[in-house]
Length: 321
Image (cartoon, rainbow, N blue to C red; front, side, top):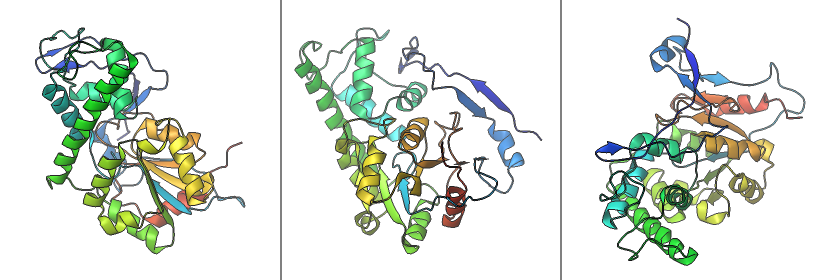
């Protein structure tokens, strides 16, 4: 049976718990998505091979070598989108955050799953998400400030307070013990370490929440043995800006072409490729429809992916230019 591939653009809307509102996200020329029909995937790829591989026919004399394996955290090490959304909505309810443009302006702001999937796949980092949303829909009233903020310092106070509370709420969810790492992640990390490859984690999320996630999910020993760990606090620009991966390359002492990034979203893929790094995708339910044409391989998860597979992929990448 042939695989069905359809090109479309997704337009999503934020909503209150009981209603939906018009789309607020602007057109994004980079956000053309490829919809993979999951009912046909297993028939098309019965042996769990990567859904897409982009390599040369044979390795060149200048082939890259895998010296460093770099993981994103949210969506790669754990499926976390729904947990972050829950924490944001809990923060909005706790501080009675109400936007003037909402059709349910008397109720706390609520980001539904479709809207949040679109938002988090376009804008990296929690504070930029809120700043963009409030800028588009009006700065909200809340129990933090008596009136909707107009001055920059008041807006910063609102966003900082919401983000801090949301981060602590997210930590509580992680510490509940109900969250597990995605399949294959720990084994692949251990394979890379045993083979002498350098390991890094680069996440756009708040450092304290990433540290808690990593210590809880990969274990303190693995976390402390990382050769590089960077979070959103460590760079000025968030993904898709390449800063976090360029910084990792410098700290690892490894050239970008000898690093391989594992990401789950188009934002992460763009950050990696703009840094000159090759990238494989392990998608989630909220990112499966995105256009990953610049990835060298696409996987549903890492359960059947071995280090030697990634080494071969990187060796056969055709150098740019």
